[in-house]
Length: 293
Image 1 (cartoon, one colour):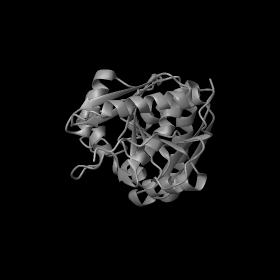
Image 2 (cartoon, one colour; image 1 turned 90 degrees about the vertical axis):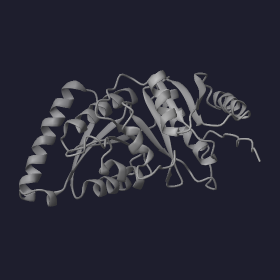
Image 3 (cartoon, rainbow, N blue to C red; image 1 turned 135 degrees about the horizontal axis):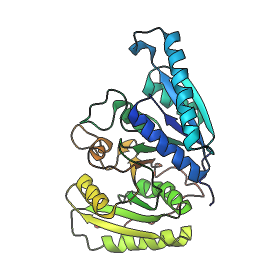
Image 4 (spheres, one colour; image 1 turned 45 degrees about the vertical axis):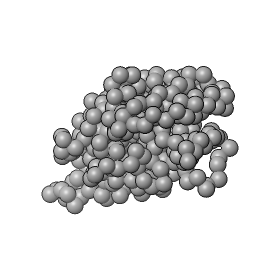
């Protein structure tokens, strides 16, 4: 299998049970994509009663113990460890920028997280502040392979360009792709737009396992959750567009927060390019939808 174009995957740990679950997912993902793992722990001494040196020693021991156990489960995965002092979210964002990390795999909860708020503040801040692709792992999600990829799409130009990343991932894993659009209106042109989109994707990618599905629902989150329950994809891809959430935020909670309350599958978070930015030669080009005005 041709490996996904990923040299390094960043994985974070606070040594919690939920972090360990995300780490195991990342190592299994790394095995099938021939990627190297960078395991990062942020040492926030301000939150601890013990001295920074004692905390560093304790973290090093925990990291060594963790890596030794992972080597038994995943002997062929290359792993680099890093312990960096600083606030967790700031440290992770800085590390991503300094190392030019393109993929982060992170658990949606860490130590001390509210069980009723399944996406922690650290994860939410990282999603908002880093441009890299992120796979957010719910507490009970297990890696059983990626055979079905659902891609939630709007019909904005930037969002359409961003599906390139998810399509590449699915194709290289030989997974089935379903473009999922949630719409509460009966739009006669919509079936035609999505059909043509799928035809063009198949032609440009030379990959035939691409389909589409329209969810009829007033609420985007409800529509996506219904699709996940009925079709059981292995991962759901969603897009942030122009530094704003897609689907757009509702009330006080972002779409990532709302989705984490209802889905048990990992969420692949992509960042769309601005429409006026130059297109990469590797991007899939999609026609704009027909205007209804």
